[in-house]
Image 1: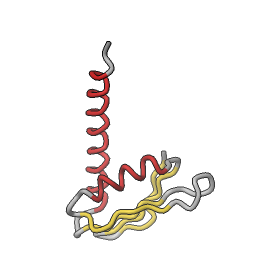
Image 2: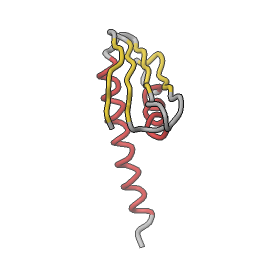
Image 3: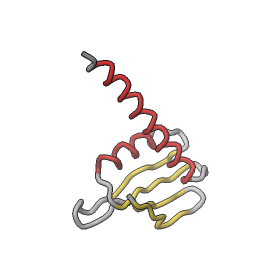
Image 4: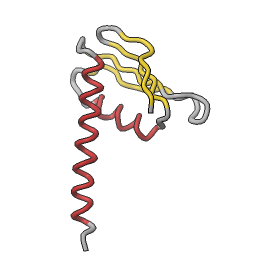
Length: 92
């Protein structure tokens, strides 16, 4: 994975996320949209095999970098919780 900030202002950011697909982008977008500070979160991917996804976020003025970082931390926490619950569910 490689990240590149395409454009950034105080409350908006376009972030290219090379090497990722709809899987990560959909999860990240969902977590971002749950944040009250986020006005808009979306992404565009022209075609999986010929373009890289671009994440777009518009906030209430909060630095978008902080919000994306916190969203990523939330995703990690959710995945850790799933692994724990799944491990208990499949114990023999």
